[in-house]
Amino acid sequence: MTSCAYLCATLCATLLSLPTLALASCPQPGQWWQAQAPLTNSELLNTASQQQVVLLGEQHDSLAHHRWQLHTLAGLHALRDDMVIGLEMLPRSAQPALDAWVAGDIDAPTLLEQTRWNDVWGFDPDLYMPILTFAKMAQIPLIALNIDASLRQQLVNEGWETVAAEERYAIPRPHPASEAYQTRLTDVFNQHDMGDDPDMLERFIQAQLTWDVAMAQRLAEAAKGGAFAVGLMGLGHITYNDGVPHQLAAMGIERTFSLLPWQQNDCPLPDPPLADAVFILANE
Image (cartoon, rainbow, N blue to C red; front, side, top):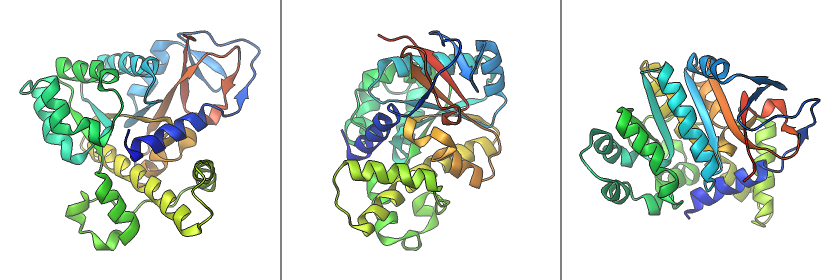
């Protein structure tokens, strides 16, 4: 697993321990919940399909989360023929391979080789292959949202002014993080015993913001071009409208909808501000 993926996995694990909300009636597997109340599948999908950008969170190593993403993508595509699917997992350099895959010009092993999947992401590609195959079958464009680790490090360590706009894909400097987001990132930093160097903590936070703004910029570009952009990414980039939603808002994207899977655990639900809606998964 790459360090990039490891950080996101850590953020996801941290979110799984967030406070929950006790309810008078218990959520059931297969239900959508929004603001402490259940929604029908058609209500949720109709609302989501009217947005500019929809974000589907995941814990990267969870098969159930990827199955939920696939089913949600299929429901959204039934309502929006202009959908594109954005992938946190791959950097911009992988775009030619994604285009060739959707066009049917390369097979799965070649896709993984040309995208350098194991080097840039590292999680089991079999978890993602049903989604990639669905996109190919339905001819839904796939867009790489991320940037190479070397570019991210250069932007963080040397500054944005050192990299020409065309060399950083016209990605703007990130909008400052909210206080709550900085606190959560600081907690993750401290969990890994990285020391108490303020400069190192600041670089850590800036790396996360660079990651967020890179994905937001690519989704915003697609949405402003007229597409219905659906982004797949780790939970930590989505929750509480921080991360990618925060950067999208700074770019003028007014209609963003964040959806998360939630593993059923007795009766509680996550705090309502965690996402615009959550889907209840059965315990396995």
